[in-house]
Length: 386
Image (tube, rainbow, N blue to C red; front, side, top):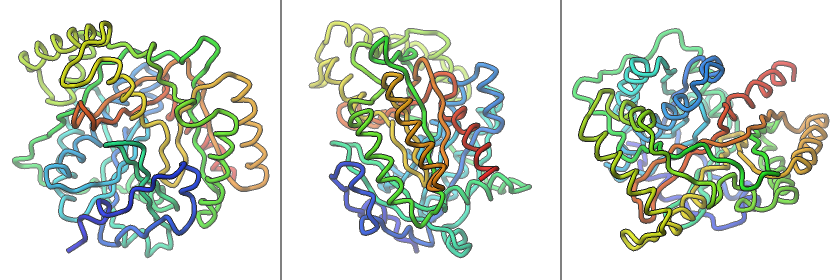
């Protein structure tokens, strides 16, 4: 039996993010764990057709389905949001349950949004036997919020193998109940903190998997030098966060969660959203938290920096900062240390997982017009030439 509590037992590193990137802070992922990939097919075309919010919602839903299964069994699992998909690391004990839930989620997504997903798994053992690298650490961001950090090319290799698989894995979904409790998508598009600011999604991959720790440490130091710390470069701000009382948004949230119309859910959610707007506007106190306190938690718990073998980050800052950072990345690329892609957005979008509204919630953030998906286009073109 695998050590299902491997990730739960990892120490939470309370260090500035760049200081984590030393080999001694990373651990081998157990060979008997599994990598699961869930990725929206033809996401670039879907984004081009104006379905970016749907792509984000479906992608976040795939992570939340797995997180709820793990939580029910008191297991912690690493997860990585990629805008148009997600990556998970799970012990064998919950592998089939997660795959079955994702198959149901895929069926609902195709039926209600016209979005089909690549869903599959591969054992960590197979990835390691191919000579790939997969090291993990756990970073502490605050109470109720930690994130996995991965070094190596293991997850990217797993994604390639799963996407190239000619036949989907046969998974029995009989009696599978899809649990997407906590999925919420009721925020309006979020403008940057000031008129002068812009929003940029960056993808950065170290050219040599064995030297990623050094490369990523340097990149994150440079990010802080140019843009400021993670709070200063966060694209979310208190005065820009607005709940949207929208029939369409609530309906889409409902269809992702249940795959069908549920009148009670729609009515209750509409009323809760209406009360939520008042809660934030008048700074009411509900369950020990005032509206502005909760909004500050949302900003702090925004998932704006993901390291899954690549750095994926969404940043706000003025144009001169982007120019400085791009010049640095281009220089590093010419030296053969890394490959990067980026995309400029006018706004950001957010999908949320609310496990506990008082202190445990995470918010998946992307550029409003396909930030990470569009940045990946530039990245893949360079990758082919590298």
